[in-house]
Image (spheres, one colour):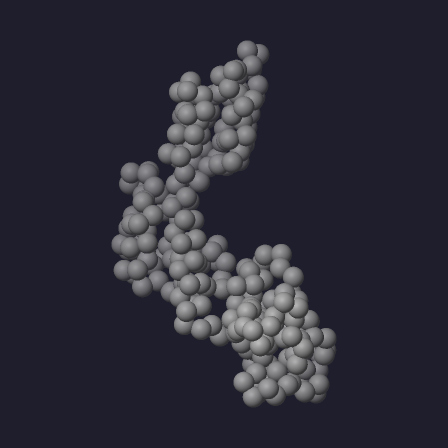
Length: 242
């Protein structure tokens, strides 16, 4: 068994935190040892070095017994014995077996990411204002929404919204804001607007001022207005189009 660089079986370290990624197919089982955090990043689409995800250079049929998968089984299911090719399929298509502590920590992190996303992108359609993060978090708990620590936030939003909508008037929405920046602030503040959304139409006026339409997530509207007012000392002009 070949340990990956930086993994010390004797003194502890990343190998001690490694977990099993398991893939079952046609009566065959395949397992690899992975870093749970890096495996999550890989599954979510982050640019991760696959070799750093893997704790050991081996494909097992049973990690705990130390039994390696046979060449026949690998070729039967994966049509290759190439280690990295097989290992990546196991990670992406199989199941990651986390410890209780790891699962709790990852679920909490993913939960916070989902709450942040909804806070920024959703509003109460009755008042057209954002819900506070704690209100959304409470609704997720009350609705007992199931969150997957390995799935990207965007793929879970529909299920979370369906779960909490009976408890909260809530809707994913975007707003188009008409903005006019005075000449003395336009060049300096232009970049601030792009941090919040997409500039859809724009025009520089003869007096140096800037006018345009900016599409932003509805949940950041207060933050957007506060930023522009602060940067222009209140001289910006804005109007919600929809």
